[in-house]
Length: 200
Image 1 (cartoon, helix red, strand yellow):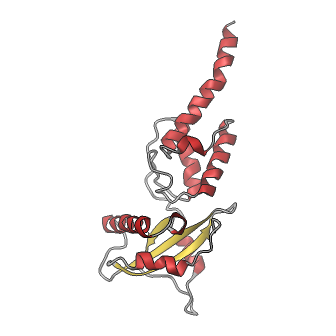
Image 2: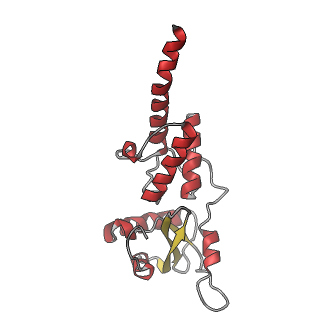
């Protein structure tokens, strides 16, 4: 994965060391076109909430712990706080159930977009990253984005808007807002000669 040989069980030791985590597993999940990401499934200690503010706080702390202890290619792209790890009747991890847990929530609140371009770009990000509720200023890599996912996003928006942009424009600000701005700027450059020609 990503050119590295990974041992998900070893990676799971990082979130499992959190004092509020009862158990944790890490599994690779394919998003198509060779885009495979590590997903962590976290079971909190008894009596702790699996949703709401407590869950969000735990995920933020796990992200921070991973950033401090693991190299980039070993960090999970997303965390799912669950009441229990789903198991099959044979006592093995239920992979199909995990896939359902990794599916994007359909009832998350949509992010507010100021422009039509931001709306289209946001839809592309949510589709490729398989996440809902992304903010237009959210950092692509903080959302669990990978280099392959970024390539897919640029391929999609370049085709959709007939532009030719690449990842270098997002070096300082990898956000929906920044990408939409660059798209609009390139479209203006393309349209300018046509407007001048029309006035002659």
